[in-house]
Structures are given as structure tokens and as C-alpha cells.
Amino acid sequence: MTLLALERVRKSHWRGRHEIVVLDDVSLEVEAGELVAIFGQRAAGKTTLLRIAAGIEAPDAGVVRFAGCELGAGRLRRLNGIHARIGWVGRQGPFAMRMLDHVALPLLRAVAADEAERRATRALRRVGAGELAGARWHELSDAERTLVTIAHAIVREPALLLADDPTSGLGLEERETVLGLLRSIAEERAMAVLATVPEIPDALRSHRVMSLSAGELIQATRRAAGEVIAFPQRGDGRA
Image (cartoon, rainbow, N blue to C red; front, top):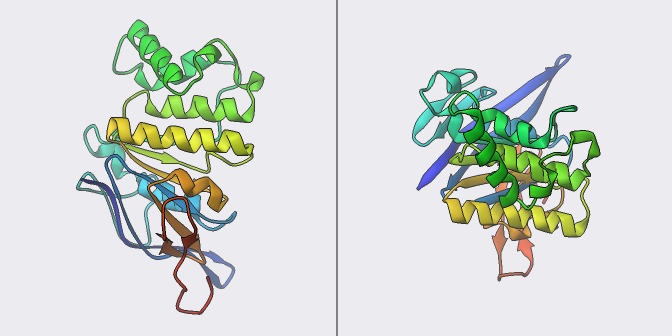
């Protein structure tokens, strides 16, 4: 089942008189139970792609659909119940709040405080961060912060999870843990997960790998499990 579909999406911005193309005719689909990783260097447009996929930002052209519903900037919140079905893994967190309260926060409009706390505890334990319930953001390592943001994103049990460079700045073992966690969550909850990564090795635990460069999204092919990932040549002859 396709949960997220981008069809011929284009996005650009202007720098003086020069148009900077961020996304150029980008199309992709993400299925339930699948982790798709998009590799790209810094400023490649990965965050813009995720923001458009979330309905936070509108494309200049093209269509974005989540669970069959067309999204646009701001429209996500007007579609009954849909905004609660999309989770976002970012890089920010609260300074003074306990991590248990931070993870429970998205639930407080829907359920009682004690139920929100129970679900938040369960989410923290699921990502291997149960012992961080009483900690504050400034007390956490980068890896611990990533785990907490994943717990915060999955506590509402969304159908689609968007992760913005969750492995950035982490060590090799920590990166493998995070991507392995995202894959297992996708599989066990039949959740569609789209994650951007700064390095190709981070993508090896995904079901599919794509590359974003110069606005173009390129589908990679795996020649065999655990072996070399090959990206097709672009029309201009560059990889």
C-alpha cells in the first residue's frame, strides 16, 4: 500500500536574478512497512523534500499525496485527522522539560495526562531510551537526543514517519543503531518511513536507497544484498 507519493514535484528559490532549483521533477513512492533512505550532501534539498512530503511547504509544481489525499502548504491541518498520522524526527528539543513530558506532549489534546505518560514511557522504551525519562535535553548526548526525537515522533503511532538526517553527527555504531531502529519500526508497525542521510553507508539498512543531487532524485539499484549500490548516470554524464 502506497502511503506517500510525490509526483513530478518542483521547488526553486531566487537568489537575486538567479533561480536556484532545489527539486526538479521529483517523483517517489513510499509503501507501508518500508524504510526509504535518501542520500545527499548538505544543502542538496533533503529537508525541503521532507517538508513538502509533510505538507508543511508547498511545491511550485507537482502533486503530493498522503494516503490518497492531496496535500499543500497549510492544508494538512485542515484535513480531518491526517496531521496526526505524520510524524517528524528533527534535531531540536526542549531545554527544561523532562524527556518523558516532551514525548507525551503530542498526546495531551487527545488523552488524559496519565495515559499520555504511559504511552510516552512505552515509546521511550521502544527506542531503547527508557532510562532517559527524567533527563533534560542539555544532559543528553547527540545519539540520545536522536532516540528521544524518534520516541516523540512515534508516540501517536503515525502511518508515515519523516526523519531529517537522524544520523548526522553520530558515530558509526550509533548510526547503525538509529537506521536499524527506523527499519524495525517500519516493519513491525507497517509504517512508511522516509529518512534523509548524509552518507551512503547510513542507507544500507534501508529497503530502498535514492540519491538527491542538483535537484534530481535518482533511484539506486542493489546488485546483491550487502554489496555495492549503483546509481545510474544522469543525463549530463555526472553521477
